[in-house]
Length: 536
Image 1: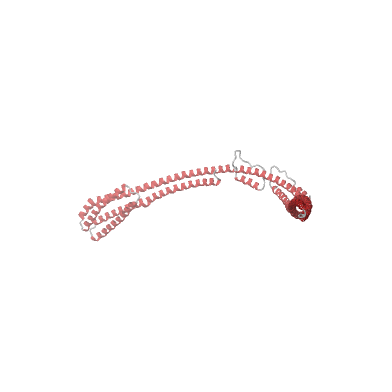
Image 2: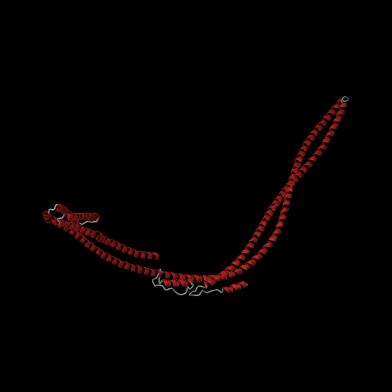
């Protein structure tokens, strides 16, 4: 759809185009008339004048020749001869100008060319007779002059002047024809300009009517009415209705009507929302104060909790230190138990070695006992043999008796040693059992010490984790304290912003009160809410 500016430009451009066409046609016909007038005034009239000059010079020369024929005195012949020469030069000048005009003319008619050819023919004949007449006149032969004038020169001069007269008549006729054509061109130009002028006026009226109708359809009414509506709307008066046509769907007034309706709804909504905002901001301010009080109490409770946790942290750290010392002592006990187990193991090994040595000693005693028994038997055999020998064997019998006594004492000592060794072995066995029992007990002690050490390590780890947890809780409480302080600050800011928003809502409601609506918007008692909240 074309805009108003485009329509106006197109309408005025069409009118100006028609004006340009009318002016161009007028100029074209005026140039044609100017050309015709130039043909009449500058060309045809000039050719007519030159033809008249040439005819006049012919006539003057004929008069001068007659005078020369009538005057017999030589004193008067020369002036006439000079006059004839002067007229001849005048004729040549006019003929030269006429030829130049014909050569430069846009067009030369066939009749003009035929007449010019005949003029040249008559001129040639007449020039010959003029020269002969002047020769006879200068020779004073008057009889031949008269005959030449009447019989030869007069017909040639008559034809010559007649053709010059015809040339002048043709040029006059062409001037009249050009004048008639110029008149016709004037009439045609006048009629054409009148026609185009009337057409331009009609088209201009149609264009103006179309533009006016289109503008009124697009505006929906008079511009003054639209300006009045705009002024009332600018002043805040949104009441009343805007009159539009029944079938109007796209006009400016319809758009303004829709705009006013939407603006009225918007202003009503803004009023309602502004009142709601004022009421809500008052509630927010009151709730902010309550929240600030609650957060302050929460901050005090957090401070007390932090103080209790700091004491608990000190106790946990103290327990962790004792657990660390217990871990150190259990580790020392475990090390001592381990050393005691190793000593007991060494004692067991030593007792085993003693038991083995006692066994070997018992074996040796058995060997000694066997040797003593055999020695005793040998001594008995020796005594028997000494008795058989009598006196020779008496010394041998004494020796045998001593050997027997020695063998018996050796056997007795071996028995006693065996008894002692058996007792030692029994004691060694008993000690070995006790040492084994002590070793198992030391192992149990070592296991118990290791278990105690593990428990102490777990206690230390738990105490450390508990200390870290309590430290983290302390840090969390510190952050919570910072958050609570920031929250308190933010709540104060929210309260201040709520008060400011309430003030601005009151100002906005007052600003919206400038608009005048058909249906009044229900309004909340903002000032009462404001005062009531502030008193709280």
